[in-house]
Image 1 (cartoon, one colour):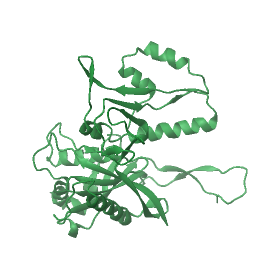
Image 2 (cartoon, rainbow, N blue to C red):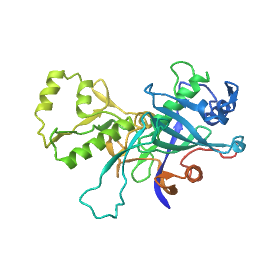
Image 3 (cartoon, rainbow, N blue to C red):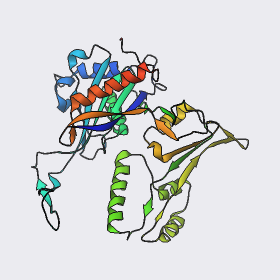
Image 4 (cartoon, one colour):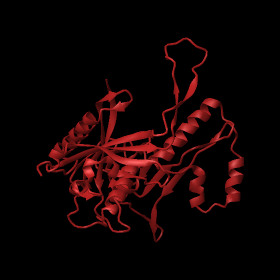
Length: 334
């Protein structure tokens, strides 16, 4: 069985690193090193990192065939595991006639670590294609690679792996500089909203938290130095079945005139934000909105999980397609 998934393009931000930095070459080099008497690529235990220091574990798990690593491509799967031996599930057939489906706690054993999600990626030089999981996003890959390279002393303190997005207009044209960015904050809904709305609210909240892409309206107001009293007063005015929405406007002014925000800044600052939550204003008059460089591909699945080999192959195919179309300057001849 195959389902469609979105493959995104990212590119390593080289500013702040060093001349000639090559993400793929550095990753392969670190994986070929020995630690505790073993080659890192040959023992997944050596690739476990608790990046949140909360006993959840991020692992560079599935790797592309090491015999191909001297070529231009490396590909892998990153998984995020959490502590806990219980999962929640419905054991009945969904074809069964019943007044309700019974949600059960299943104990999967003390040795089990529950999968929060998986991300798949391929790297060619400093070019990256990735398929995000619902709870494992591009930010997780950035933080994992930063921690991996810092432990291997490839990065100095303060240096980080940042994988910029590539934005364009909705009609496929190059994004112009803009004088203003607007970002939609997550809605805050009333405490006694209808159950279905509350369920949707919880899902939205958890998805936003897992995406690490940010803030509610009240969080934004805190950055604008609203006092807790003022925020609480505003919160109290939201009806139990209502919500509050907000849009955060960002612009630069000099001598009472707005300055343009560069495309490079947009590609970095908005890389982990859903394009649907972004608006731009400027000379470009972005018709059709703003989109990330991405494509949808049908990928084989095994149950609810992607087939890692097919996912990596499709990501590589997307990178080749973008390169052939001149959308990225990616060299597959190395």
